[in-house]
Length: 304
Image (cartoon, rainbow, N blue to C red; front, side):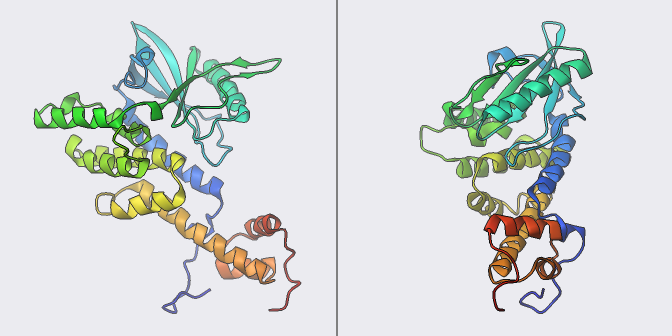
């Protein structure tokens, strides 16, 4: 396949990472590399019951990512009144019974793995339709926090006040990560709040490495709750601020691969066979076969 300028299209592993699960795997790696921002922090801004200090990021090696809009478990060790508890956190745009079943199972696995009790907290941005899961072996009710009920305007005013007063160290960096999911009485939507949060990062954090990790977490969290068109738009607007961000490269790869997927679908609609489509786009033949099944159109039966 040739580009408009006549050069060969991108080759190699990057070109073949079109499947969503591959993108999520890369995002999970970025997430794990950024989670040390939680160490020493507190999540009391989410809920008064989460007021303990985060003392450790715990292993979740058993966990698997199985849906498009969720990531592998985040497990934190929290000290509350001198005792240690586990906190199992999930980001979920649309909570289903299957999600709750999976999270309940992960909760038990984490407790067995780390020998402490775990509370599961699901972060979402709308009122959930389901709040618990029950079968013969599991009776699971997590703590669900709907951030759309919060007012981002109040948080932004308070951050601005602390910056002007020279009290940057009093700003909770973790709250900035979640800011794009908040509601807004003045009508600000997620894209605008994401834009504001990204531009805050160099003001609240001087260390370049921490800035990048904060931006990476903002990107990964927001991408879970925003449609693709809006997400690409806000990334483009903020590209100067985000030029060093690992997550931007991951999303960029995903966007290019999504374009290849659309090209492949058009080729299949025109009757090209799986092998030809795979060779011309660089997608795996198994992925092309999946696309063909999605289209419900057998390849190779229409004239070229």
